[in-house]
Image: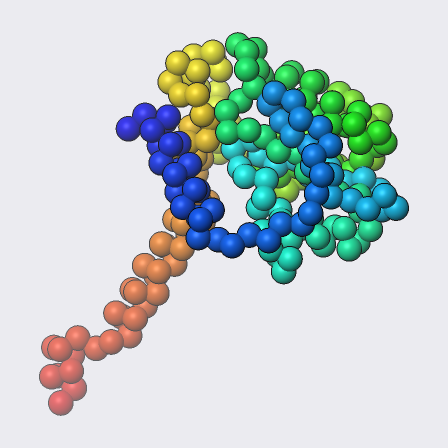
Length: 227
């Protein structure tokens, strides 16, 4: 199965979840719309400072605002932040050179200018990588930087996935394999360090519980011997 086919299955699974989950999203207004992104404004005019949530390009933005009881957006509004959420489209921006420069120096920069003041950036997953690059290149637009599960390392050890990334072909070559990077990253993560994935950890835990139960139960031979 190609990466594109795997991503299509993932998208269909997401659509099914969309139909099953009854979302109750916080009211917002569309502040900015361009080819490649949308910027939603949830805030009250009197709320400060501004908070820009930058999700991963391969994730739905509404995970930050599913229902009032589990809404990051609503919690931040109640904490008096002026909340903005950047939305990425299903497909990447048009053009052959839609790399980091487009995301950082064009799309996120437009959002920062539309906000009109230095904002706290909260980047999740790959969105954290983009937020970090943006903060380093455009510090005057950044009040603070929050990273949530971002694939970055500021230590001397880059992690298990770094060795595999060095072996991956250039981005231009990957475009011939798949237009969607999501499953490529999943495959790299699994190959680099399978023991760190939650599903694998859960499976290992279940196996350990099964072994402990089986060792606690006496075998038929032992039971007869005990008689």
